[in-house]
Image 1 (tube, rainbow, N blue to C red):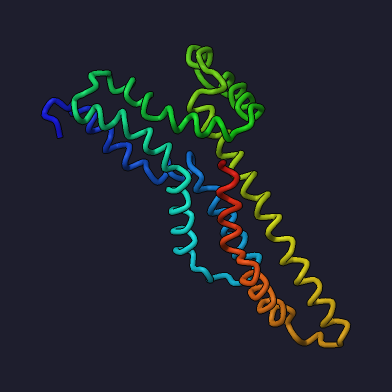
Image 2: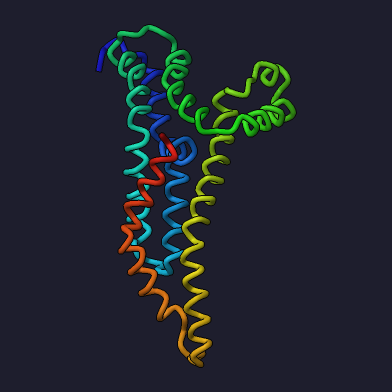
Length: 215
């Protein structure tokens, strides 16, 4: 590390690292990805396969894949400050660092959501701060982005859930028509759902579909 590095800068970087899990969930593709994967697992009906740890690991790796260009753009200002190539203040450096992340979120949020949070900010924030706020400010974009990602995640999860629900209903009605009320529909439908999902390469198609939403 360069001997001229500002100690305050190093302290702020360490503080930012402690907030990394929160930043990962709220400002990246992780939230939507993990929602879709968990809903899919529940739709199939196997509560512990894949295990939750594997689901989170898949979501994390997919997030790293999606966010790689943004993360690379964010590391530039940090590296310059640590090497002593940039004499800007820490506030300017922080602004340059989060700018690629802000642009990533703005691109994937609805303008109506950002405007709605801006109006709420003008009522909740101090007047001086609220008067300077815009719909594209970082702290306006973050909650709008979270809402967009949760909404998109549940929409995709719903579309995935419907075929499995239809299959459950078909199996249940067939068993009822055959007079086999004592047999649990899950006993028959679960192997069928697993077979169909594997036959159509469901996991691969699902992950590609999630990636397509970030093109």
